[in-house]
Image (spheres, one colour):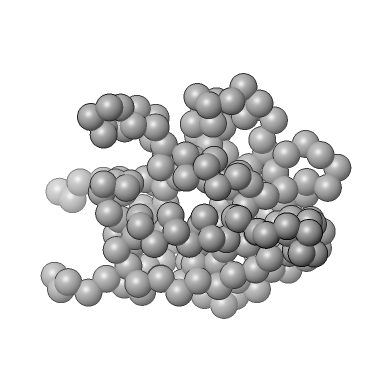
Length: 192
């Protein structure tokens, strides 16, 4: 096996009325780029979007990113119960398959930090050969849900969702994603 890692194209979408209109600086896109840059060994091409909380615009962006060849699309923001929070609806509208385990695990991780985690409505779906995951809006919560919780010795206490992402992408014929184990260890079944 060579030392070359498959290049991977990742779509990252920050959904915020205020950040997209310039009221405040978006923190979601930089947080996603920083975490993925540390976590993956693969060369990454990011396809970024900063859009308002408008369901049709969100759905259009997700479709465009999948059509552009993004094996993974991560969104941040718009997953709460407020009226303008429509990211899950926009994501489900473009889904070919729903992957409920991702949202369930994100809420489990977040519940270790805040009791309001039960108010989050993150979903994950498959569209064509792409995995789309709605993440929380805050950079700290993004890292927590992706990485999970670790014991003092560094072993996982509660698995982060990203440990399952590379194998999921394998199963939908995407690129082979390799992780830096000190950040997040990808889980794949042992070859017989």
